[in-house]
Amino acid sequence: MNIRILKSLHIKFQNLRCLMIEVWTEKYRPRVLAEIKGQDDIMSRLQAFVTTKNFPHLLFTGPAGIGKTTAALAMAHELYGDTWRDNILELNASDARGIDVIRGAVKDFARTRAMEDVPFKVIYLDESDALTKEAQDALRRIMEDYVQTTRFILSCNYSSKIITPIQSRCAIFRFKPLPKATVEGILMKIAEVEQLELTKGAIELIYEASEGDMRKAENLLQACSSMTKKVDEKAVSAVVSFAEPKEIEAVVKLALDGKFLDAKKRLTDAMIAHGLSGIDVIKQIQKEVWNLKFDEKIKIELIRICGEIEFRMVEGANEFIQLSALLAEFAVVGSKK
Image (cartoon, rainbow, N blue to C red):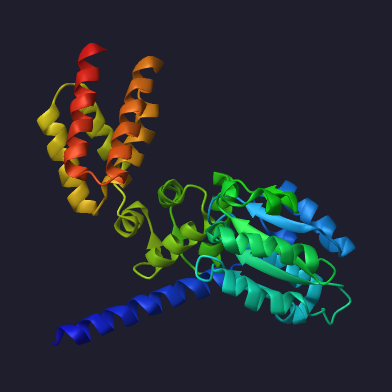
């Protein structure tokens, strides 16, 4: 078969899979603030704003997949009802982050009044920390000039990348990663509705891989369910390309015992078997270090080594050479303990 046709089919399959995941996520997205889990303090404050139908510009900050976009859309649902789509402009600033977008689409939407009993419309800028400095400067003037007709909700992963004048114009809400109990409850609810058999071990592995990111957890469950109705640890491991903690623990212990070549071979085998990158391995090794029954000073030294090796890989160093260097460092520390 022609290689161009194969590439075309691959792209279509990837787009279809992304669409399936998007539909899956949208299906379980809460429509009111009270349904959002894991951010109770923030939701109670936002609910007060919705009840009074008045609030300042808002800045949502925190890691990905923890409810920032869902909270903004839930507010729109409660404020405008069935006509919510006509009264909210949702833009992803990482795709459209130039000054032309701010002066064009954002300004045009901001200068028109809402048709409902709520006296303003909402502009939601997702990933606003990707906006250029010039775009943020233009945005702060628009936020000030059209405050009578428009409220802005900005969402970002790093509030430090938002210029101070914009931060001072907003009420800041800091979202935190979802706790394990919340993620487990949502996954169990999805499994019940979708008639999936979800094991305890699978939930543990999904949470460990997602790190409190509910969107990632749902996507992992969606990918697993496409292969089998019984989602267990084996199914999750196949999807996430995630080495089991026991494998990484064995590698760390071999290195600390001075068995450098055995540790290197076992780590290389795990990386090839699971398709892991060097950064993925460093993150897992760092987690396993904290579980070691060693003196705190030794753990601190091992974490320092992980940080140094991770920095080298981010700067472009060869990951296999750097991981070998990490195991060598671990062996040196192990010989002193």
